[in-house]
Length: 133
Image (cartoon, rainbow, N blue to C red):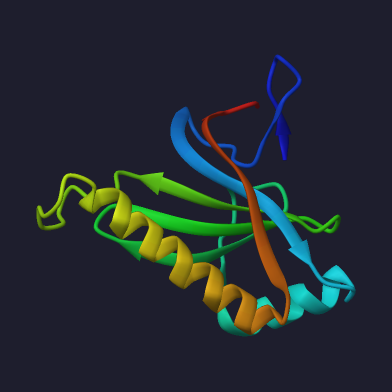
């Protein structure tokens, strides 16, 4: 996590600035974080250089990237980077949101299955990552 000037925490640090959507939550399990982390490392590629704690590449398609970020205190987030839905077919007025919900649901199910833990989302926040150094 990185602190913004107002004291709030953000998951991502980028150069020079990058808006992203953060779906924050917790990893619910009695197991130690290192056990969960080792399971995730067996399945997902780590994403280096942008996130302060562990970041795993979950989905990458059509200029959209989905990262699962986690900390030893078992706080976690799904980060949606880029534009989502531009290349997708038009359908109902809420088709883009429905597609996003499907991607998030599928991703969370996979993460839960591979980690052996429940991932519970608690908040959705737009964020802005700004290079700090």
